[in-house]
Structures are given as structure tokens and as C-alpha cells.
Length: 215
Image (cartoon, rainbow, N blue to C red; front, side, top):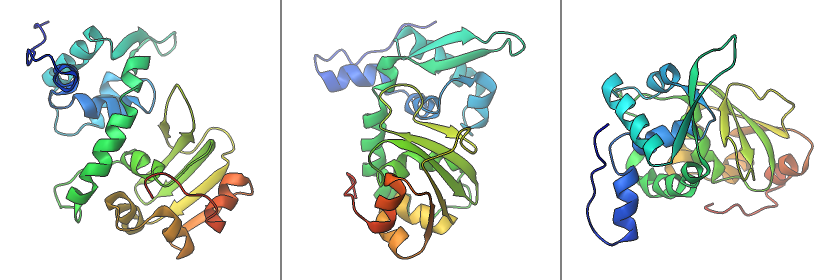
């Protein structure tokens, strides 16, 4: 393992970039916010990264205390990578970067890869409170946990338990919300987002009775 490169500056921003400033590192964090992942799963959901670079970044992140690696019990018997509490503390960093980068999205390019769960963090900007939200998109389904202080922030596929609310929206609406062109509440008001559920969160979305941060 190569020694960690440093800016050698007595500045907290520089120290942070010593740990997470390398290409792909924060995108690996984005993937691991969805819970433990196998190396092959990470590679599949990070199109464009080479196997050597991914392996190197994972080693660096483990050394820097951002991730751990553990072996699943049989019959899985595979290694998975997961965030430490310090790694999970990067969630607001990624959210802030997403807010800042929304203006750079524009229309999706023909060369742009996409995964349904990449919309999880942008959609969290339009939600508040606590609960399990299932989201159905053209690209696939995912679910997010609101208000969770540890553990996964989102997961691929339908929720394994009954969600507090189900949201369904098309690709264009989801992209507009991700770019900041449309708030989630406005999309619900305009009938562009289907809301199923009878709990507080579902009623709040339908009635526009909460004011989520960032919206």
C-alpha cells in the first residue's frame, strides 16, 4: 500500500482532501451509504473505474478509517465493505456537493450512466421526518430511511418491510427534482409524483404541510 499523499497544509479542508480528495473516493462513499457492498457490486455501480483503482481506493479508505471489510458467514462467504461511523459522517458533505452540483447536471447526455439509487440523495432534500420511503422510477426501485442516525441511508430495490410511503415518478420528473428545477412538493402538487400511504409523512407530502430543508 502506497503512503497517503498529503497537501502538507495545516488546514482542516486540506486534511479532509488528504483523505477523500482522490478521484472515486467520494463516489465509493455514495455507494456504501446504501449499506455493505461486495467488491463486484461496487465495481458494477461505478462504471468507468478500473479494478486496480477501485482496489487501491478501498485499501486507502480502510487505512484512513472510513471503511471496514468483513467476511459474510456461509453460505455467502464473500467479503463486503462498509462505512465506519466516520465514513458515514461524510453524508452531509455529499449532500452539500450534490446541492452545489445540481446546476451542473443539465440534460442527461447520451454517454451518462445512471442507476436508480443515484437519485436517493437528491430526493432526500425534499423529505423530512422519520420513516421508510419506497421510490419507484423507470430505472428501477430503491428505498430511503429518513432520520436514521446510523446504518444505511438507502437501499436498492423495493423495501423489505411495509414502507411509510411509496412514491412513483417518471425519469423526467426525477431529473428535474435532482437539478433543482422542481421541488418534490411542487411535483406532488402538479400530479407528477404518485403518493401512496396514510401515515404522517404521506399526508404531509400530499398536503404540503412540511417545509423540508433545501426545498
